[in-house]
Length: 394
Ligand SMILES: Nc1ncnc2c1ncn2[C@@H]1O[C@H](COP(=O)(O)OP(=O)(O)OP(=O)(O)O)[C@@H](O)[C@H]1O
Ligand SMILES: [Mg+2]
Image (cartoon, rainbow, N blue to C red; front, side, top):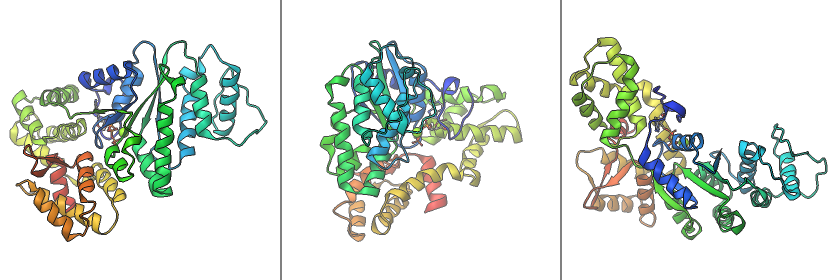
């Protein structure tokens, strides 16, 4: 297993997460349309890669990423492109005339340089195309000999957010409405399913749009952090080739310092343990492990954390909202948890009492904060994110 920092993994580089993978598979078998919910960098894309590479019987997967798409038309155009370009589609044996017509029309307009054996591109431009209706027709006509097509859409929520920012509230609602209609199309039952994800919370976003009812047909599955045991195993697997001498107790010690066990943070730690090992040799004891932990916050790793911050900056309105979030996160770096009463006072100070709860909720969805067990205060999720915030943003 290679230590691939930053990129989604596939194949042998994927650290098995049987519990969550089984849960998703069970839900797919039950015919659900699923939303995989998890903050940034938790491993959503890697899990999608794994599902695609290891399909169960009678399942075929298509992957699309719609992060930069900001229109209804653009969204369905991209999905049409990915479906037509998929092995599932190109190897179909039963192809109706209607399918040939619809897919031929789509292919002509999506600039896809592929040859599909049963499609001839007609030069007749015909009616101006509506990607959404034609894509739906395409799905209705697909016949995979009893197999199901599972269309995975990565960064779906970003698309909703992009449409909201570019075209406004009404268009974002229309996008969700059209998608809802697709989920209710009976001709797709047992044949097509969607598995969506996104690194910004869908729930706070739809609440803002007053559109929670438009996504209540989806089954939500949370991707949890790794358990301590899993994180230790991942650590071992990542250092396997390096000849590093480190005992289980030291691994546990350093893993527990992370406290929000995302594969990404384990990878960063491993990178620095290898660095310390290269400069000071074996064995890696607690002092050297500590040094490795401190090195995670080195300037050279700044790029990895800036991705979180960029996302935050992009989504907050400049001015009061932005200042409020800064205040909250700054104060959360203290040892004591941040009391909810203090959060409320900050909302009053920044004059955003009408919407501060949704903002704090989105910080929870984004993986910055969680509520303490008694629900009276907030804490940083991750000691790594907290230290980084303190060092570079505060
Ligand atoms: N199961 C896994 N095995 C090994 N590495 C993983 C695993 N899951 C995630 N990672 C690592 O964590 C990081 C983030 O993974 P990935 O891109 O899949 O997450 P994501 O949730 O899709 O992130 P983003 O929100 O930025 O799109 C990468 O460095 C990846 O290598
Ligand atoms: Mg991803």
